[in-house]
Length: 525
Ligand code: SF4
Ligand code: SF4
Image (cartoon, rainbow, N blue to C red; front, top):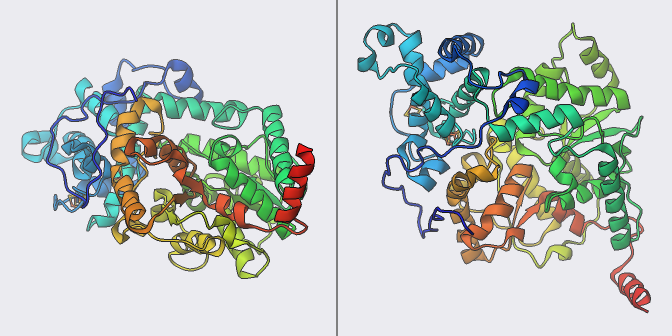
């Protein structure tokens, strides 16, 4: 690998690194060009009166999001968060300590929005908003994956992710946007998904997958697109249509729907679960993206919406779809489309429902048959994805977001082991590529930020012979595929939870192992 940085060591015990001041200074992603900025309603480049505009925007956000002001006012510098961020642990840069990251914004807030900061700035750590500050924000707020781990350990619950989103929103407003996120959001508006995959290509991919499943199992399992009147609309990340191991998960969902006897469809108009507008803190764009899903559900006249394996998108769906687009409980009574959708959707099911909830319900009812030995070549562990773990839930029980995926894995695999307690569940470590950082121009940040998770994984590889780590987030899967080799582990260690389901499920009428061998011999003859 040609990068000019060193991969952090995997150590026997976690160590809090000595500070290396400025270690990641100036590390930043590519800037968005005007053609990436303008479709999202942002100026194409830094505006002339950027300082006034930035302060105005900060004032607007403080008025709109009361939590932001509380977070900026309430830090007591206790230090509990300092060693909790994977980017600090992996880079040793003190500005990657959550409290220091917050202070990058807090110092400007104090200068322009507090009495003490206006008149005695030096006394309260307030500073002027200069061009250097803009550059510093751009660099260090793109070294935060908005994972919320620090907030779990903060006695005041200060959420650095919200501070990071606010900073990015201010930057976008003055014309300083990030290419990766903004270009992707533009593609969703233009084509329907992050990849810019048009409808004919999507249809071909789905047909190929149908053929692959039939060849493997002898059963015709459908992956339908734009089928009006289906029971379920599946909203899933577009990585599920082409990337490994995501695509194996998609085949798993299809097999589960097939066995459940539920009709389902994908939508070419809303062929994307991901909503990167959350990463850039833009409520308006987040809403615009979510409304595409409502339109697809209305047009296709479905009764249920099921959500595929995607972490941040599940947070958007679970926590925000209702207010963004009237999907789910609490839909705006004055929004006629939201009301129409409320009437259309079946009230007997959660809106939205996660594919893991869907599969686990069927497993509990004994409606799926598995041959667990199909996964006997694996010893599996599970990576809790940040946005699922700390920003949403699943099922009816508290902690369902932790137990349901694990229950599914244990139902389809004989060998399961957890990573160390302080690296999973609510305390899970980010994969290092979330929050809009999954771009090659941030490879150093991604590799170094993955160190704590890689260390925990390595520990169970050594102690329990773990061969695979399963996840339910498209970003985690892509990130691990890329960073595992840096830590001398195989890229194919990362698997989709529904890939494990797919490998073990026994479909009604499926050909047996003997029949498969006979078929292969006949084909060879
Ligand atoms: S990356 Fe996570 S732990 Fe680090 S500052 Fe951001 S939200 Fe906190
Ligand atoms: S844990 Fe909370 S209160 Fe303590 S320094 Fe960090 S952000 Fe401030």
